[in-house]
Length: 310
Figure 1 (cartoon, helix red, strand yellow):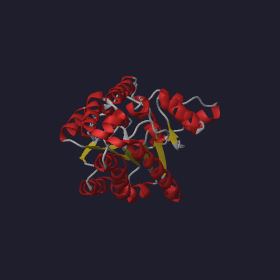
Figure 2: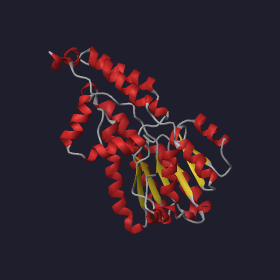
Figure 3: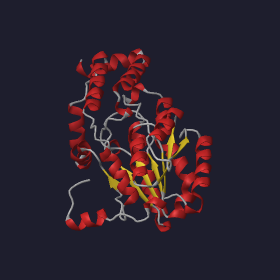
Figure 4: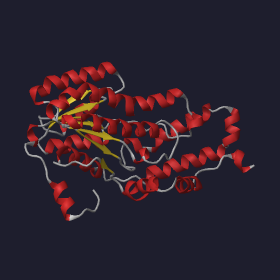
């Protein structure tokens, strides 16, 4: 949360009553932000429906939370799984409706030049980060409208400034657009929509090995002509750049989950939250400067293709 005036501090510090009566559905609770948020809200006494991709993730979460918390196995990319999870949520919440939906599950395994990737590479990320959350949100909307509840969508500072190629940035730009349209569409129903735009944090998504392995796979499949254009040095420096991003990721995951909690429990939730110093001090401010300046800043430290060095 950023520095605020006393009036704004008072306004944002007002918290809803009867939190123990409210149900919240969270996706991506195996690890990371979703896992921490589920524990955080459970301690607050809220009724958490935590969706996990794996049985192992669900069992581990149950061991660390109260009997109030219920887990749901959900593959956000499969409509049948989404539909089943929505029906289960409907049966659980009953006439109370659903107070909160946190679309947290995500994939970032696409950080590489666009020209090295295929339509399938993009589709995998879009399915998890954009189409899946859309599918789940639409399925749960009747419950959210009944409770006049909250939708919290996890975007990224990369939705303000495209810093790499691949499907991650476009998917998060899509989350922003989806959130904006939902916020306006649902305003008259009393449903509020908030967007979380984190910088880099030390979650499973910031584990370097899968990203480097994927980058190696993409590079190995690039045509010989494109390899000549880019060059081996470009590939190596791109990999080094990814390692730098991940090594600078913050371990303070609570900064993100505190924003999520505020969006769910505050009388006056914010429309956008930007946890992380890199988001606040670099990515988001840079997204507001003239394009020629942001392009210069991002391009000056980027690797140079071999073709351009000839």
